[in-house]
Length: 418
Ligand code: UD1
Image (tube, rainbow, N blue to C red; front, side, top):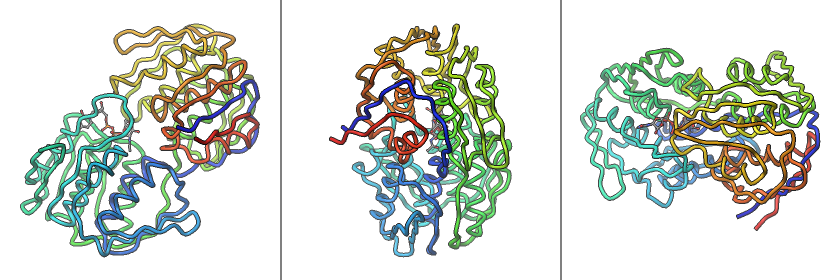
């Protein structure tokens, strides 16, 4: 377990280049399984979750090569339809391979996925989607066995707009006979990005971002060169850091329209925020007042992936803040670590009440999951004294060169390798 050593108290000033979105890259990597041609993904950060997906592709017989920042995937020689537990347990998005493997090989054996420990995270909606299209699915000994010989397009109504299930079904439906309509799909920007990628490869998907996605199956997908949208959660994390520590940040390659809910809340804390083309400029005195209340919801609601960072902000904001987590039942584990830093947080039935303090203090804490870990780094940057944050491999899943970017804007942080 490596750790970060953070000395708090510095203001944050300067430019930050926001990376390509992790949550776009992961399904798009799975989608590469469906074409025999080369795919070039541009400017891909080496998130450890991306590396884990690359390892799965290689295990399936595909080729993966880095050419500087670009990732070249070639799945021409794919010859395996089995994703074993050793690989699947490392990353939640391993489940995204189920639809694409089934579409390409007509059968799949995929282990239950791992990923951040933030709740039960069942996959029943993925599986019922495949069954609705005529796939046979058997769950046995921790594996999902799927047979796709009789799969055809059809109408699917999702019981909940799950991001992963929407993506899995979209990908599967690309290469099967007939038209598929997904009602009540997730509407996250990453779903639109996946649609754009599939269409770039010669697929036929429309409606992503609305209440219905229509996919017309095609005989094959070809290769393409693609760059994903910016990571809205990395963007949000740096904005919240600035709100807490004070300073002025220019976030480059950042899209205001993907962070509307956050921007509304940060303006309440007294931040000044301006957007110019693909830049967001944020200024803060570092003396935030409470944002009031946030309630996590599916897009365009407040993202659950920024809830932990908002808890760190609430902990240093004048007044009381209320945080409701509606998506993942175990996504408050960072609260226990923030308490060690002198934060005043009470928790009951999925609701946190945070009483902001002018001062919080450095402590030895441990990342509980990817975004929870990021929230502890932010708290450390604002705290009096020094903080060590353990188990930062969890942070590396979704932030690339996090400490380098923070050092560039004036933070005092270093990585201690184990
Ligand atoms: C994706 C994101 C993750 C984000 C989450 C919610 C990726 C790689 N990850 O995760 O960062 O936190 O969306 O915005 O894109 N559910 C079921 N059955 C299912 C599937 C989901 O009950 O078959 C439930 C989950 O337990 C959860 C809710 O639906 O309570 C949302 O999950 P989902 O949208 O599927 O999230 P992920 O795709 O796992």
